[in-house]
Image (cartoon, rainbow, N blue to C red; front, side):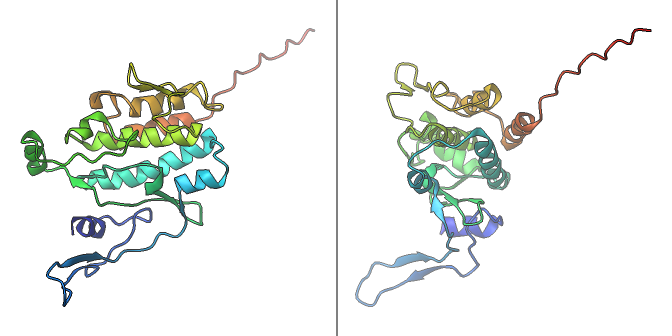
Length: 237
């Protein structure tokens, strides 16, 4: 029911559409247990894990990664601006449509950032949803906040850029609880690598404050580097 209510509010081509009467409860004749049902738009395409599998797990390049990150951050901007956060971002929950556009799916774990939610956090009454390798530590203890989505999204892009799961010992430093991924990523610029690392910072306060900060970083990454001007040749008379 909560998923249906959220999806009715969020109107974006990158989010499955749900109409007013698409959530309903069905009461079977021979079973006292009622069934909660939800009809939603089917996103045609494949999820990003299937996409990587289909291309023999070859890493994507930075240009595509920047474009995809902008698309997902644009979706998250709408989600966060409506006081929700997703809580379960990972490659299988991002769909690639046939037209090349991305969509974020599976809003079953979505939460609303209200005083009631934060009070429930303090009382320890928030369920900690865990997707191993993608879930930040604060979420594991029921303390998720909007910046928790940035951590999971950063881990997702490490997978896309390296084809290594975040728990792979080749990139995961268990002592520091960090990913050492940039040495095996192909042709990643320092600015883009630093942005991904900031999104995955262990402490939420060290991550970008909001989606606007991430979008601004992406604009700067895409801005062409000015070429040094050549000195004018001297004319001898």
